[in-house]
Length: 387
Image (cartoon, rainbow, N blue to C red):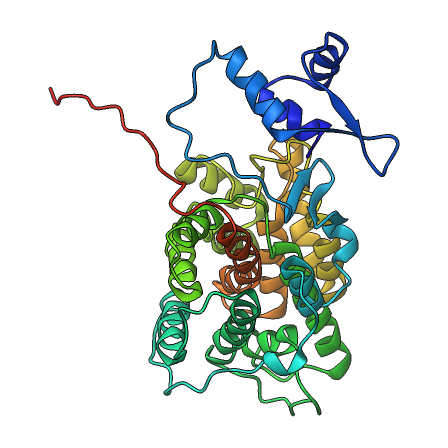
């Protein structure tokens, strides 16, 4: 069943038009648990959409993907019906279990023993980890959900543990969370205990906020691989390959460079030069959130607690100047970049956090795709002769 906003989106109409269809008998709405919301049958909506196109099917559409994982609303993503801004204070492991609809299993968050990692760029290193984890999984073709989830937990932990530059701080007693492990690699310098706790909480929040975002490009790639019944490791490689593009996973690294340039040369010059050569400001605007990315606020609040006063003032000036010139509001990439810059993380830290977090979302979509008809993603080409 579809909620009103999603039904209207599929039909390409506004909500008043959708309700007009109901009053004219073209659609039937159904009650939900919330008396203020109405639901619509997916097939009824699709039939009406085809009728509005004169009965023609859209041949270029890969598939109609119905998902119960993430819904994007004006106030941000909802994971399994829970606003991500409310889940932001949860642990990454708990949110991953929510996405996967599985019970907690702390013992499964253990790294696979691998050879000493080679000296690679982080993106290549994470692909190397995925290939080797798959090679060491003797029954990787067993696609039972509980085994897929177990493999995903191991893969995520192994990715984090393979990262270079672990901190020299004494390791905390007991099992470390994904956020603690990740923060210790990304900020290797010794950090006071209170600041380390704040850094761990911020890393956890970033992982939660980035875990899924509905049918993002890399997620579609994972679902396409899942539809061929590729195993989790090969499907993850499809997502990693798509994420490697600078227009998807690399935006926070560009935003980090913008902040560094603003620190070195001043905010005005940094923004002007960025617009001169890139034509857009990385870390600003979002194709989905026209009135601002709701994930920004909790991360900037963490940034304010971690940053020095001069760092906070610089980022605030950057945002204020962009707003004064009607640049779209900052997005989550700028917030992640600001946290990484203020804490001394490497320039590609945002991409690394994004990748580790998104493996959880990819796994949820992978599992959901396994119950669909195989090989359903088949586009139609329009043949044209060359000039």
